[in-house]
Length: 175
Ligand code: ADP
Image (cartoon, rainbow, N blue to C red; front, side):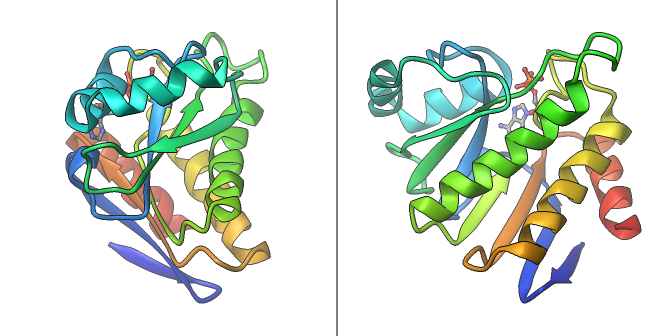
């Protein structure tokens, strides 16, 4: 499913983000940027050691921020590493931090000439964010960004399982 926003396209698909042929895929990393489980582990396995070698020079990444590296052996040219919030009870600034992940990732994309970006469901795995709420924040933040910036042509949410896929599809339909 897809939607046109100010000359750009937002898409929601089910799949494995490591296979995406876009300028940059986004990694749901942790503050160390030195690798982890979930989508982070999958990206480092598929992209090879060049990614972590660059990550080591970046000095980590704060929650809500984003940093870019090579895509190594991935079909995508770059990986943008963002660090989502761990969800606790919703009163610890989680929503603003999650929105910041999507905003900062797109800012870093623009600064590096990236025109197509694929996002996973940041914070929706081990970090425990309630999926429908995370989907609304993700879609709403990306849509607002595309309405106020030019240069990004395509943003694709690549969801691994049916629950996240259905939630992101519903959020995009409602947006
Ligand atoms: P976080 O720590 O931010 O919660 P996780 O990696 O645990 O990050 O999960 C984020 C989301 O990424 C989850 O919805 C998980 O199912 C999904 N995911 C895991 N592997 C992949 C993959 N290869 N491609 C796309 N999404 C993936």
